[in-house]
Amino acid sequence: MDHYNELVKSLDGNDHSWTTLMVKLCGTLKTVDKLVVFADSNVQLLLEKVAMLESLLKRGDSTVKGLEQKMH
Image (cartoon, rainbow, N blue to C red; front, side, top):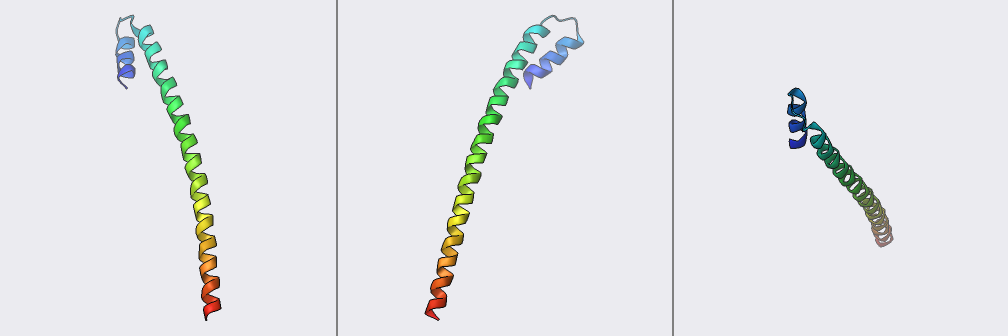
């Protein structure tokens, strides 16, 4: 956010440092993009694991119900 604010300030004035600030901002955006992709892949992996756990729980519940019915 600092790079963005500096860039806006530079563009508002007569400062020619906007080119350097633009490069810094682009670098920051690339880093953020990589982090978002990484986080998204981790979320997908977690969703798959949650689905697997739900399946296991359903099978366990079904097994317990079956045993309860046999006992009564």
